[in-house]
Image 1 (spheres, one colour):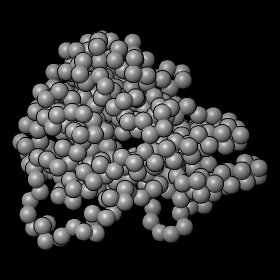
Image 2 (cartoon, helix red, strand yellow):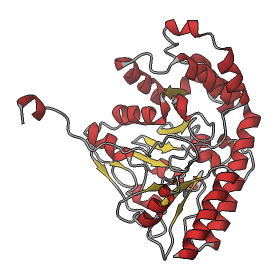
Image 3 (tube, rainbow, N blue to C red):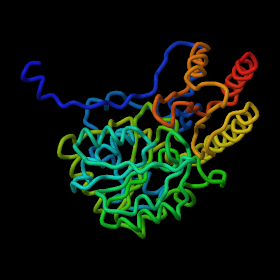
Image 4 (cartoon, one colour):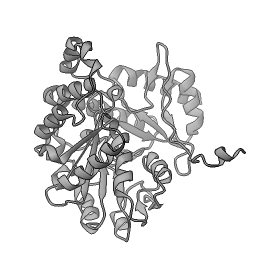
Length: 363
């Protein structure tokens, strides 16, 4: 090894879901929304003047932040936007987890947390989920340098009730607690319920200045291709995030993403409609999977985490792939006999179940 090679940072990278190309495939492996973005987004996209792309975008993303502030009832000084929630979360690790004490996140969770911790040299501990894949709030009541967890969790889809989320936040007021709500819009029983009114930890922000809530446009708003994520918290936390952002790149979000993202936020009716459709399809899929002998946690996300007692997950994953049906397989302890299946359209799910019925009958 040459001397300059010895100085290269060694990390084990996050492995994203496969992005297959071609026609006649069903893509249920990366938790994208199966429906198109808001008509307001599509209309604005047609009207955009490409000549404006010669200019730098607004570094403050003011229009998008104003739309989010109106949607969540927060001042613009309490919202931060980034290039997807991954960008926002990475900046959170860089900004808030510097005490030298271990950051806490579940042993089964979004695998990027471990990657960022190792990339930035952040010590961490991973309290184990219980036998039912649930987060135990009591495991986070100890000395730490910060706490982060998704709600609903991934890849299980399980939702932690707000009372238990608050228990974690309240017990850690000397640390920053980050609740990663990529899938929160699919949780709860209220049809079309605003996240801030029901299942989201946004409602706790007025009580705790150590809480940061992170969400994304990639799932419920059908805009994974634009890469928009945002964080909500106290003005002090948001100011710290902006200080770090402006220290290395002032123009992180492009102009089309800012404008199209704002249009999406303002189309509340379409947002409610698509979320309700996905939730209805998810509940129907649960019944179909149970009928076929699958078991799974009671997901409150836009995916299911399924296992069959008679078929190895990896074998089923490969069989589905041969049929051009893509789901996600995790070759890891406690997960090796599960598949994560994104909720697609009713037609896509029907094709999936037709294949599963035939495959299990043959087996």
